[in-house]
Amino acid sequence: MSDASSTPPDEQQPQAPLIEHLIELRSRLMKAVIVIVVIFAGLYAFSNEIYRFVADPLVALLPAGSRMIATEVTSPFLAPFKLTMVVAIFAAIPFVLYQAWAFIAPGLYKHEKALAFPLLASSILLFYCGAAFAYYVVFPLLFSFFVHTGPQDVTVMTDINAYLNFVLKMFFAFGVAFEIPIATFLMIWTGITDVRTLSKKRPYVVLICFIIGMLLTPPDIISQSLLALPMWLLFEVGIIFGRIVHRRRAEPQDGDA
Image (tube, rainbow, N blue to C red):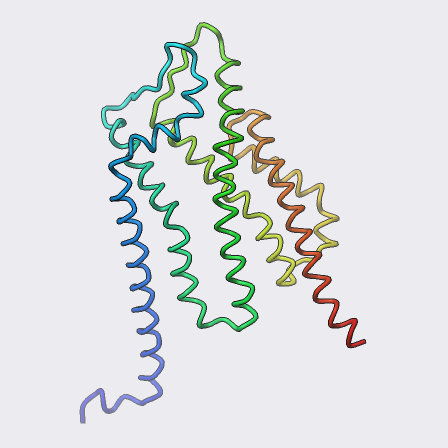
């Protein structure tokens, strides 16, 4: 008798679902990678235009005769290449998260699915809003402050690679910061904390927001405040939605009473 036939059925059955899940996970990861590569291939021809668009908030404020420079031999190629790859990933986020959702959705209860999908869509939208807020609101104020407060005998010529690293860090920081309402709502909904407790800890939250702003932005009070204040306001938004959830949970209980 072969080894396969002698293997107890109970030891064979758990392996099949695991292998199927791994195959499905690999398939969805491959789909996500293919979409990112396709988007990147379509955008690569416009990589220089994409970099100009991202650099425009600084270039528009540079004094006459100033321009951006490349201090490394490979920077004129690598900086737009790197930015285009990041933009491709950025654009593919909805599809990538949809693949993640499709993978985990079968294991969720009906009420969890009803809540998880709106939260997923909201998190994507909030991340994009955070990046847009950084580009259209923060960058003009920040770069205007930096350009016009320096010594007059210093010519501003920013390296394109250093600028790219800076703006990507800011995009990520503001994108993540705008996820605070989702995080606050989830903590209240799962019972980790409640609205009253979070409201009492508001002074500590404000302090933490400014500490995070200090760590993720340049060492000046303007850029720190431009990140910390929206974080605090978004925390308040999360509390508002948490109150709504608390009231809806309390209504059936009141009706039963």
